[in-house]
Length: 124
Image (cartoon, rainbow, N blue to C red; front, side, top):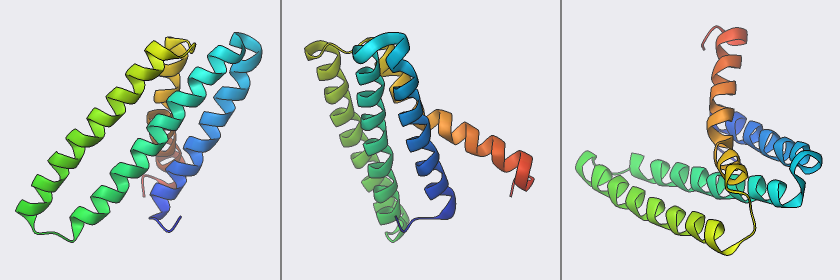
């Protein structure tokens, strides 16, 4: 992963939170619950990395072209993610609350990273 240090930190923290929540949910909710967290985390993890690659590509474009590019890619990413989440909710045995928890892993990691950064690096 040759990305910015803060993006790498969020990615590693997301993986730790994601897998930690999967393991902790096994004895509490069973396989269906852990699978929901795992699949939700997988969807959002792929989505986050996809968004990052699109943003990196847009930086080299002109302002107008980049904004059109990002809007089109955002709508494509949103549609693909919505179809995948819908399919997971309808065609699998995963628990929907677990799926939502899994989808939240990147946000949890971003807030945790922000908190660590404020506390230990004085916001730098």
